[in-house]
Picture (cartoon, rainbow, N blue to C red):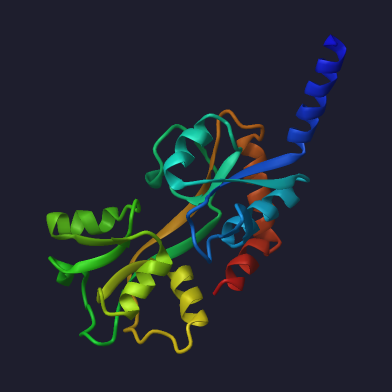
Length: 236
């Protein structure tokens, strides 16, 4: 019996070493993630996981959890990494990879109202944001006059703008491009006002089964062969 248990443990260890276990927010929407019947079937998170796994000679396995459970689960080693985040967005002690991709947060204003020329004009005005997302640049500039109108996800935020429930939203450029391409006709908006650029990385669990060095090497290979850039282009 002892030999059988040892053999099973070895087999499980080999299976895990052949995997890259990627954690994904189960409440995310496209273009970041499409979840069907509890399975990740499309989106930026899926593509990043599969690209990195391929460059590491591993197979990607995705663990879906709601955002409020991600941090503890990653710290406990329930997955190897969580990608497309920044250190400022997560609490907890992780290793952080090199940059995966850089994107831009923008302010979008619908065309029914005058355009915003400077962010200071938003004092006291409701701005569509996502529950749980942080906007330190807005908080630093506007302080208590930064009035958030939270939505559960980006899709809902865009819908609020389209229905006139808010006139301004904060959104990343890649997500805006994705929804504007899908909507026919696209929302009538002023040219987006840049808020900040940010470089996303992967949070790597200290209790995972993959070394930070391996992750960084895989990101470097994916950057050189153009697969990360091609992934982002697919969703624009």
